[in-house]
Amino acid sequence: MKNGKNIESTTVEELISRLDKASLPQHVAIIMDGNGRWAERRGLPRIAGHKKGADVVRSISEDCRRIGIPVLTLYAFSDENWGRPKQEVSFLMEMLEGYLKKEISTMKKNGIRLMTIGQTGKLPLAVQEWIKRAKEETAGNKELILNLALSYSSRREILDAVTRMLTANGSAPAITEESFAAHLDTAGLPDPDLIIRTSGERRISNFLLWQAAYAELYFTETLWPDFSEEDLVRALLDFQGRQRRFGLVEEQMVKKP
Image (cartoon, rainbow, N blue to C red):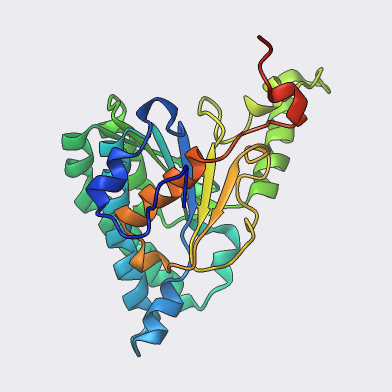
């Protein structure tokens, strides 16, 4: 039961109708986990899970756009993922390049703007070129920001932000939360309101550590290749059923008459 309503046996359309469009999260971030396990459970090679996972990136992006989520950040490739077998990494890079080539026209058609965070300079040159092209061709789109975290490490992002602050000012500046946030990869974007992790793992794995200070966390057993619009909407309904405190004690949350 959520908000007094049974959401266990309903259609996606019925679930969507229960969303309060006025209180949707402005930024949803997803740790896409479980591609390998999805494939292994089906006796398939791991790359089959990655292929299926890429299809879900496309569909969930479209679902967020239709529902009215302004920003979607997807943890697509962590800096630690470079330590995976070379063949798997090569396949992931080829798949990313292919995704960008194929999806630019769709993103332009549907008003989706591509952004990235992370050390994209470590990606293959061909991938970097397609990222640049996709960013340029979708820069004016306003329906949804699709923000891909590529070769991303939140600890590295924080260290890089400190370096940028020192370089820009020539000496240690007066640091505030606002001035520091302006030097993060996510500068200009709202902090995530909701972080979803698939596959049953219950950690955030070096993802948006600074930005996640007051994010609501939602964990689901669903593996990423099986994550659907219904799963997304259930996460949003769960989010809307919570009382966000932002560090305030309960008494401070009660409005005085």
